[in-house]
Length: 461
Image 1: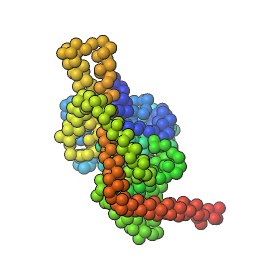
Image 2 (image 1 turned 90 degrees about the vertical axis):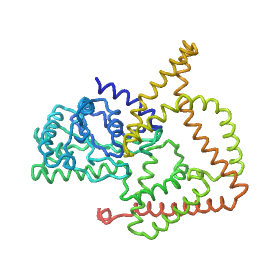
Image 3 (image 1 turned 180 degrees about the vertical axis):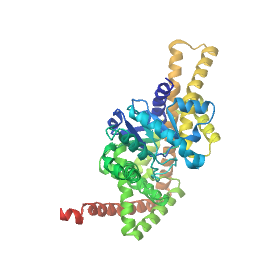
Image 4 (image 1 turned 60 degrees about the vertical axis):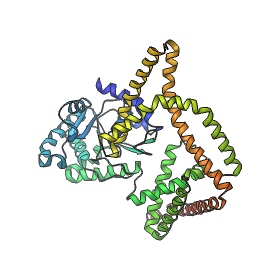
């Protein structure tokens, strides 16, 4: 009952927390057990909530034993279908014996057709890469199948979680579900060498998960990919006439960008180095005048800048009373979750789940108190009170949009200043951007041509 209630609440909270919640191949999650769902782990407790919210059946989770503290936290984790895993770094050598009991419980649960969720990386880090996988998932799945002579029908469904900004409210998440892996296909390998079979399956999981996420090898590679995204992705979107909400297509663009970086790093490292230098100079120039790459989605014209400035000013003037109403009624419940998250932990990976969980309580409690106050002190009742309460969350979202438009107004003002006072600065920025896009277009054409070249294997075929 507790699990069902929290799952329902979190489903609503997720749609509020994320601006876009996109799922690719959602139907693959609707399979009945026995099933093991595996995923990358960039956002701590947010990751199981995101995936579990998409599935109809109850799910058991493997979680590190340090979460199961005595008292209410341990009780809560057990009632939320959590199974403790005793890692050597947490409990030392005694964890081996305790994990035998954990494995036995997993075998029994999967044998009854249950669904288990595992994060094989073990720890959570807010990075766009897959870290080395532990073999526990493969050992559990192979062991469960072995107990049924590989007739259990156990499948492993890989899920890639891709966050635009894991710690930020109203960011985006793209859940990329992959085709299931049938564990029975490893029956022969397991019969020959169980240890080797576990490593083969783990390698297969690694390959599948990397295909479902943005995987960069280093921080430098990730930074370069993000810079290219910021400069070039909107150009590609416009070129292909895709809407700005085409999440899957944008994901594929970024995957192609990362692949092309690896391609040119291996063949023309000096070219990649020069591109990185040019992009860094361009971003530093943008920052020096107070602009961001999104400011150049389209080549600006004086008339466009002037008219855009006028429209934004009118919007800000007319919307200010609504903004003020929304700010007064939403600032406290909005800011409290962030304050509490930062006071509870220094790990940024925990900010989002804590903020969302705390926000699930601060907003309804604050709205209820405000509703009670206006009813008691101002005598507001009936439909007037209902309308007032409905306006609270609506104006709260308006505050976020209004704040965004303030940034747009600032950008338009900078453009206005550059057009009429510092035209040489703007011209220099546009020339740098155009040169970067030309270079990226050239690299893209070369990369696409190389991917279509016949390999020795295809020539023999």
